[in-house]
Length: 81
Image (cartoon, rainbow, N blue to C red; front, side, top):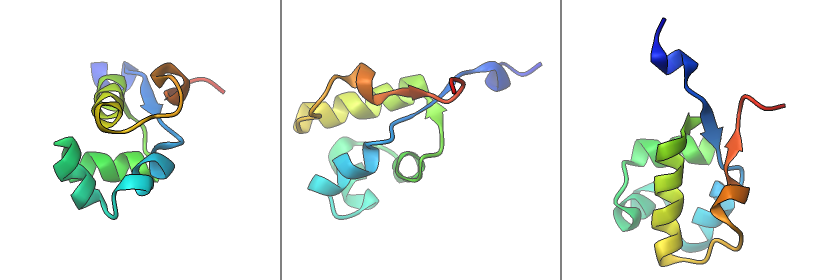
């Protein structure tokens, strides 16, 4: 069985609100956060991503702007109801 299928997937429901405060588009955000625009588009649309990817994006964002809450409070496991 694929390890990828067993992996937990995570979302940040506040991502869209956080990013639109400071960046007009995913392209602009990708340049500022040094990230792939496809990953940012997935985060914006609420598609689950790997926890390491989500934490990396939140840490990069927190390095430039205030998150307003702890990173752990923003990360949601999609396996939980």
